[in-house]
Amino acid sequence: MDKNRPYTDERELRFFATAPRPCSYLEGRDTISVFADPDARLTPAIYQQLARFGFRRSGDNLYVPACPGCSQCIPVRIPTARFRRSRNQQRIWNRNRDLVCTVLPAEFRQDHFELYQRYLASRHAGGGMDQPTREEYLGFLTSYWSETFFLEFRSGSRLAAVAATDRLGNALSAVYTFFDPDMQRRSLGTYAILRQVELAREMGNDWHYLGYWIPGCDKMRYKSRFRPLEVYRNGKWRTLEPGQQISDLASEAWPDSR
Image (cartoon, rainbow, N blue to C red; front, top):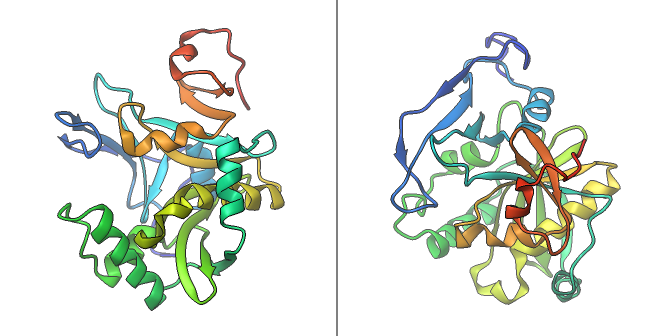
């Protein structure tokens, strides 16, 4: 931790908005983010508090979308005690039983970095992310203040996937998952979430945060398949049960979550 940064807590934290820029998820729209003061000394405890209001971590920064006239980025989390795998998720779980899952410190490893490069080249070619440096890699996934670990998945000696994960006291938070592009049949992105949920249960955590679900973005559709799913709308966490849709949350009859 940088001891020269001024101490703060969530009660005195300042926030700053970015200038509008093109949205990466919805074509033809601009996006604005609100960041916690980058000069403040952030902590996992502050992150835990801000996560309850939809904030996410990217590198050292805590942010939340704040786009005028748009509320498509919906914070979502899985209530770990109530979650049950769907039939398809159980098939994915069974398909990957041979993988060895290991919790590792969030440190640089050459084979992890090479897999990250392959993944970005396959998924985000030409998008500005596909030729990361070692510093950019660690700067994105880790932070000087967060309690981050890497969840590593291997099939024998072959590295299959890595899921960067944050500890938030009473929750885990999925930061970013990357996997072998040649192993798509395994649905490793979904499997990583299922393993993170199990790990959160073992640790006695109440939730597993998945970041933002954007109903109008195909890349985010997988997040809606985890049920029950809690979504943050209009200042409250509400529960989507199996079979319910986000449009149902317009009703004030839905019970609030903790």
